[in-house]
Length: 60
Picture 1 (cartoon, helix red, strand yellow):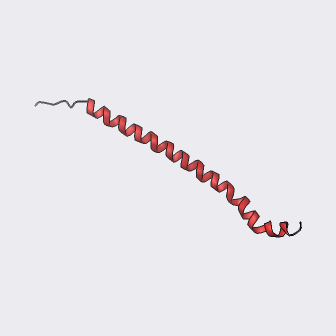
Picture 2 (tube, helix red, strand yellow; picture 1 turned 30 degrees about the horizontal axis):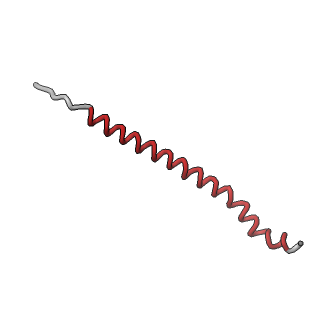
Picture 3 (cartoon, one colour; picture 1 turned 45 degrees about the horizontal axis):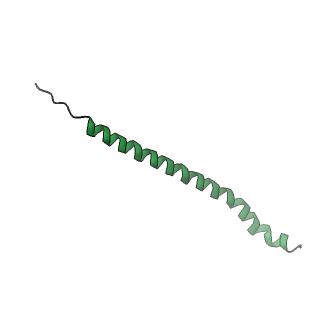
């Protein structure tokens, strides 16, 4: 029974491409998560201003 060996050069190139794309997606996901967190931090102050802003501004 004969066994054949596969060349590893093309296999390692595809791994590098997969690793690179995974790293890029990871960075983009982190940027998106930070953006969502920053946006969520603005929700409460904006809601407070909408709810209580007119009554506070009418006092001045």
